[in-house]
Amino acid sequence: MRQMALIELVDISKSFDGELVLDEFNLKIKENEFITLLGPSGCGKTTTLRILGGFETPDTGRVMFQGEDITDLAPNKRQINTVFQKYALFPNMNIAENIAFGLKISGKSKEYIKDKVKYALKLVNLSGYEKRSVDSLSGGQQQRIAIARAIVNEPRVLLLDEPLGALDLKLRQEMQYELIRLKNELGITFLYVTHDQEEALTMSDKVVVMNQGYIQQMGTPEEIYNEPENAFVADFIGDSNIIDGVMMEDRIVKICGCVFPCIDEGFGKKKPVDVVIRPEDIIIGKPGEGILDGVVTSNVFIGVHYEMCIEAGGFEWLAQNTVSYPVGQKVSIRVTPENIQIMNKPQSEDEEALALDE
Amino acid sequence: MSKKIFSGPFLAFMLCGTIIPLGVIAYYGITDRSGAFTFENIKAITTGEHWEALMLALMLALISTVICLLIAFPLGLILKDSKLGKKGFMVFIFILPMWMNFLLRTMAWQVLLEKNGIINQVLGFIGLPSLHIINTPAAVVLGMVYDYLPFMILPIYNALIKIDKNVIEAAYDLGAGFRQVLQKVIIPLSVPGIVSGITMGFVPSLTTFAVSNILGGGKVNLIGNIIEHEFTTGSNWNLGAGLSLVMMIFIVISMALIEKFDRNGEGNII
Image (cartoon, rainbow over all chains, first blue to last red; front, side):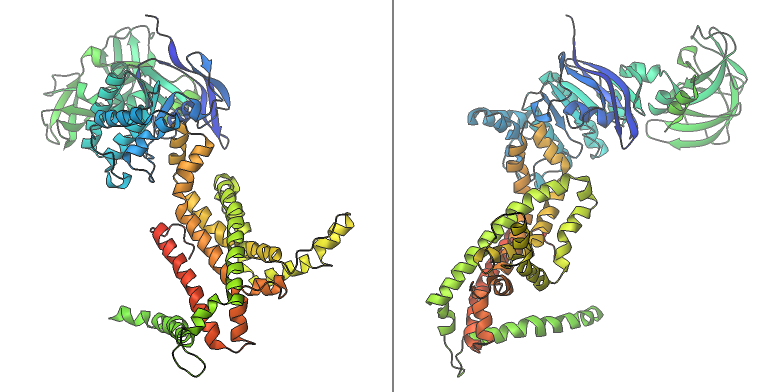
């Protein structure tokens, strides 16, 4: 089956008060995809969403929906619904009226609306809440109503603007699974905006990492996590050690004066590179057993494992291990070749600024 | 204990400034000149001249309130979304007259509207027929609108800016057009401000005597003028007090309305 892009953003630029938020931004979204825009605040992700929803007009560029230009179409004319960050339920209406809002506007019959409201409430596990007032619901319940209110209209695309940001951790995790379930049941395209990398990795089919109005990397959660394309992505997604290294030749990288075997090729000889090593990939052993010897300088228990800092070769390595090594203990570290991720150094100063930001 | 001492001056003020005068009015209202108990002063509202003045006052107050509302609500909407409004500058401009003595403001209109006043001079100069609204109910309504409009704008504006922008966007997002958003979201959510504004405009318009004196030229007799007359030239304090008690019913009704719609004190400017 040929998958045509449902939504296409073409060369979108937008600035507020002279500050460029999006710069020649391009993005294609396929039908039935769960796509997440991930980045720090101010990276342009919410602006992208608002341009799609119709609440902002881009300075330049076009928004295409199924091949049609909808750049200047008003929000109420788009087959797109939004779930807002702060729920934005109508405080003057009860739950059923809130959910029925869009259906009433489009002139559906009373019977249809009643059935739909019931169905939507069941979908978000809040059956029987029709007559409740907005105030009487908890944050998590309000957010689920906001989702129900959006999906009853059977939009082609659902935009979600950090919808779980205000919820506590437990509820957030529950809602993540709920959203995945909803997406699979409804077959709607989800465009999700968040600054929470865990949320992005858990739910998405595709993650778009953004910074300062540019796409830093786009790919599946695994690709983003395992093969970050630059230091910004590596730093933003999960914890990581980003170390200066020199690519001696294919499959050999020199870090902190020691030679590490790796699996990357084609960087040339004696080329300075950025090396990314995830803390969980650092193997700790007895002194002399690894590639570098060092000493544990801190040790914090953070749940599943211990997070330790190991001073070795003039660099403070962040390491995670289920075995605890006390502070002051002499250890060695090594990394298996496939867990060493080599990245080109940023070419220009501009790129460097992008990478170092945040 | 010590905190109670601080409230002393305020209690004394309330007692001397509000409660005692109210008691005195009530006493005068239900007694005659000899001090005997009577309902005559209150019943007097139904007699021809008084009843007419009350009806006229109600009608003019109603008209001026409706005009104020028709000006204030759209203005509030415009100010809410304008950049200037956000900084409060435009609101400040509209509220500015409120700080000037309202007798002065009303007298200014008298000068403007007079037969040979500025407006008619300008109209005559550009060859238009002159305006004869001074000393008519129309001039009184104009004065009321001018004097009490700021009191209407402020609570409505306050209620409008408190509406979450996301809620309005959500309504558009769900397919509503401007009229539907206005009807189903913005107006229902600004009801506290509207009710507050209506009360702030209606009650003073209903009870005014200064505006009708200055711009009505003695030809527009409102209930306020009658009460004033009884207290001053008429020297019948009992009748004046009795009619005042009737007026108080309207004030109490208004306050009850505010109480009902404005539970959160949202639209209140006091």
